[in-house]
Image (cartoon, rainbow, N blue to C red):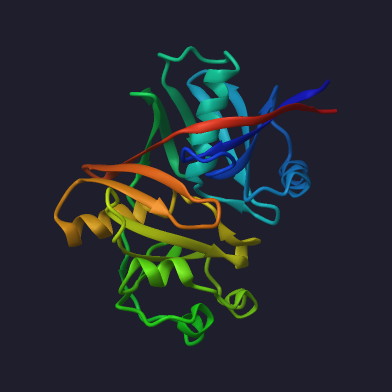
Length: 263
């Protein structure tokens, strides 16, 4: 039996081929983890999402080309987009995902897809010995949550011009590293980039899960609850963010680039 698979760009801007590519695979039944890992390696996107319908929603798992991960925002947004666009769900129906990070939901609002994810705030933490040298930057602040390091720097220019040493960064035992600053570009609140060579991704184009830490971090600094953020990777991506209690609402747009079948 052929299995539908989609290539979707998530958190896109107005520019073509922006945002973060993800593969979304609609499975008729559960597959073993090694098969899913092999498909993710074949697709070679930063994340491949696998969906299986259940009575109360869809089981959702995420794989990089090398490992399974506990949370991925852009592939969740791509999954919701695929369910609505394929007709699996009606546009007014909420997408409900059962994941390693608990129940996640997505709703279609004002022409955007809004995810509901748990906030993952960071705490101040001394950086590993080689981290700042690998990034080639001076840090204003370093923190860490259960997944990643969060590093604040002085300016948007520093974020945009960084050229990390990925070989050195790969030696640091952490899922990823986000580097952020307050935005100087009009209309934006903050910018960031995200590096995860230890998870098989040198630079992730747009990272929804990183914004579960970045949003509460910037709320505390800017004293506001709504943000427009830009992830300043070569592809670039826009995220609309708001804090509701201990949840982060992350909204963005998506485009289907390719529809196909695994045979």
